[in-house]
Length: 430
Image 1: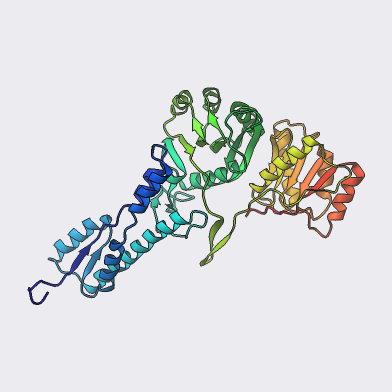
Image 2: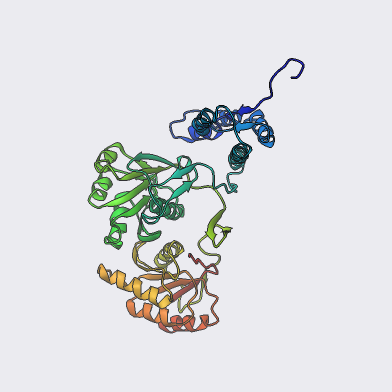
């Protein structure tokens, strides 16, 4: 460089190959290529030289400025114009720090592609500024790629609270197989409000499942998030169209159903392409992060300990009710009959209060609890819940067991000829 009088390099601009953009394109339902073609397109966009040049330039920020994102072009022009082509070390250092972060995010996206079941946490990727957070005075952001999971067909932008409820809805519907209308399959419809399931039913058709789910708590359904495991048809859309809701998630929408549902411009309509990948969930607390394995499974064992074994119908309802409890905030109780949620108690500080709430909710909509079943997310510390449940008409109970006073609840069920199942699997949800 000295021999040929080449001036020192003082500005390096590198634009990385569009890896994430290409991944989003091949993940979209409109992509018609084969999986092999999709993989080839994505892997070709893994930049090799670009990250090396960015890191080398950032490392030498004492002598040069590095720009690693198109978003910084306008700022660069303004900086060079206002300072007549000069930059300070502090300015170059800030851009260097940003460049290292961009390379890190890029590598994390690639790592997540090759390891979809255990994605690396990355809170700087795909940042989306939301209208506000949980309340209007809070700023809200989302970090992630919703395009991998959903095709948005209609409606306004998803809000902070929408996203929290959509997450709860997707987790719940993931407990049930997809419904294609074939013999032996069950259509499932659920209503989510403030992350709790307030309506849920399994029936032979999507329309019947919707009607039964709504009947479980038509009051709480107002402004809720709706989700089903099949395609929404015209008849179902006409019924749904009668209420106000925020979001509707389905596997598919028939065209005539979409015409009806799109009449309200703000309704958010999503098709769920795939369940979220990953084996862990995280939560920020204090000045750190909590991480845990996902709560997978319904029961670890099926131990009949009551005065009789559960009937076939009760067993189906007990399995169904236990899933409901898994998706309610603790302390939680779910009352189910005929694979329909009749009443639920959630977020209570005592289990007996959760049961009172669930019985009152069932009574509010005139449900007969005679022959219904009861699920509890954790053990019964006393026999008061089985006594109150029996008085309300409950004939079968399901709970994890593990209390030092399990024998009290079991003895009462044996005395009254009630079924009780111990699962060995607790489902706390805070």
